[in-house]
Length: 138
Image 1: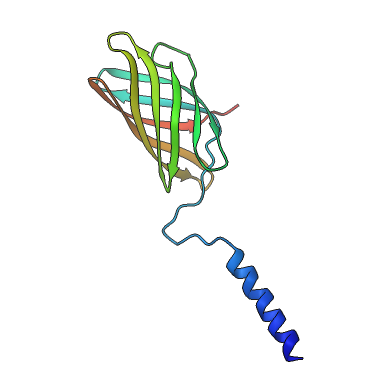
Image 2: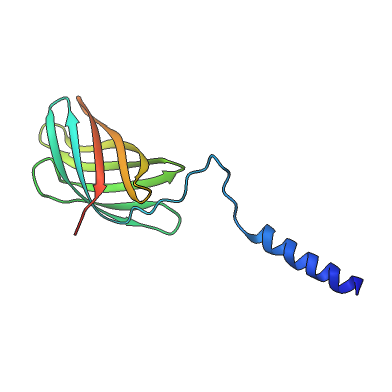
């Protein structure tokens, strides 16, 4: 009988040690794959557009801007999610500066316990923007 108890205890312990545990300060994993709409307030004016994001299993991502207007062009490269922080490079051709790689950073938050909203900044040659992005409603 003691062998059976040991086996049961070992089985229970192995189940608990195999389960990933998030520390209380760690945010829940975020899934950002899909279409997004964004609005930005920049030193040069207000802009809006769309993103299409493709997320990998490891949390990295890439994608493209939606080409809905002159400010909504280019690609999303080198995307990384670390905790609540999201960052990527917006690569595009600037009319004055040519090939440009803008740093975009955000933090995500949940609205109503479900909807993911990205609040962030974008910095490029001669300008700075703050923006908000939300998943596009189909």
